[in-house]
Amino acid sequence: MAGKAPTDKLIGQGPEVQVARISARSAIITALISVIGTIVVAVIGVRFAPSEVSQAIVPNAAVTHTATVTVTATPTATVTVTPSSAGATPAIDTGEGSALAYTDAVAHQDCSVPNRGRNPWFDQSVSLDSSGTQLPALTCRIAWTGATTGYVDYLVPAGAHEFSAQAGIDRKSPNTTAVVRFDVLSVDGTKLTSATATYQNPEPIKVPVAGGSRVRLQVTLVRSTEELDSSHFVRVAWASPAFA
Image (cartoon, rainbow, N blue to C red; front, top):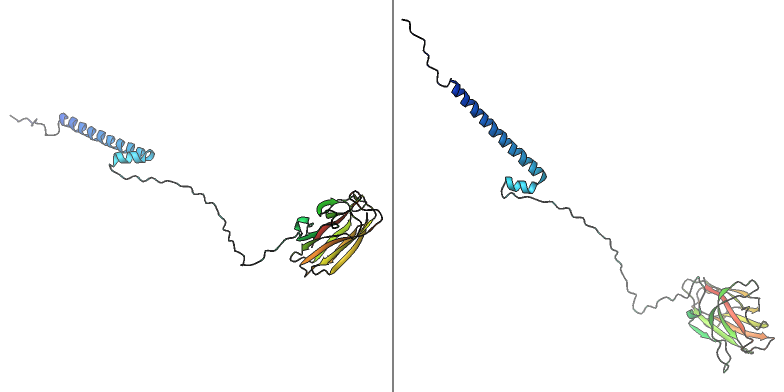
């Protein structure tokens, strides 16, 4: 009798084994997907919150923060003060290029007669002719008949070479008949220049002063047809006096 072919199944070839293999593969794939998802989440977390995620993924990891500091620099100036030499005498500015003032004078004598009161010098605006032009001036009143003389002294500024002024009588003077002499003298009394003025007839004065240290501006009453007194005075003026 012919024998039957063997019917035993080969080990590992049955349907149960195949199902088991498929299940195992599925489990591996699922595990891989889970791991990949965890890694993706971790990378995204590091992108948006580096310090927190880094600490979660790598315990005790050191996180470095970078701070930006803005510094504003303010420039400063250094001023060096050099003391003057001991015993040096400071230069005195007596108004070079501008009208001299009475307060700049280093000496003066009022336009007065002894025992007849005082007629001091003033800084005053005056008009010397019919034009009515107002000029800054050194003025004083002569209010007594006689050889009345008054003066103011000024230091010559360093570098000055000329003194100039308009010598005249203020148009507001009650006395209109006086004749007044205006002299510029050097420190030793030498007359540098002289001019005589009358009411509404001023005289320009211009005199070299280079090399000089001091000048005196002096006025003297020459004569007056009218009697002079406190109500009929003549106001004399050195108008626009200046060094140049």
